[in-house]
Length: 262
Image (tube, rainbow, N blue to C red):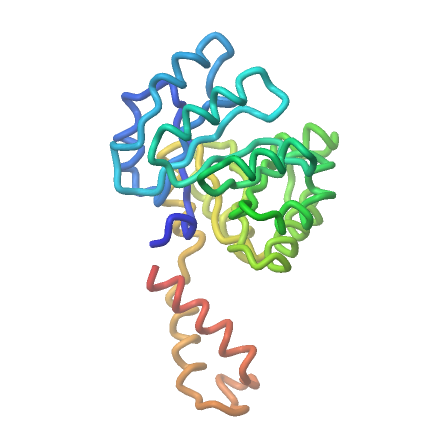
């Protein structure tokens, strides 16, 4: 798996190094060491010191504090000293400060879109050199907009991130978190909803959510069976189970089998 081709990245508080290896053994396909929301202000320095990336062969990312915070520069410098696969930038918005970060960063930047302005600039941000993937910070976005954290309220925002990613040639974006830790069915349903909209993965905030998220993105047996039938139907127009099949349908079938292989 490529470093940016992940489905269920798991957040781990960067000031809890005893959890790093446990997170890597959770089944997640990437780890995000979090210096931002999961770490109290008085613990920022200790969290920065505790950073390490040698505990796993999985892709490791560091979520730094935002550009306008007093911890940002030290966070970026600390991440640069490690062999990480990238940094996650919260509240990403276009402007000179983001341009400077992208210019100076030696690793890819995952742009976390979690403000109204960030969403409005998502297509521009996605096209910037150095931005490797868009991520939806749905909780913060709702707080900024004053909206409910529901599928209906967030449909337009999610759709815009999928479009922005596709137009820029980026991998499909990563969806935001499900706040319920003990509701596996909800995490799976939320992941399936994100997949249906065109997302390529979903953030996990607890090891319990990893497998349910992966399940939501994993094709069901009936989908795999349908895809195999479609790809066995030839190259031109054909009928499969009473429905017309042509190349666009075969493209979808190939995508389903690719996800099944992953």
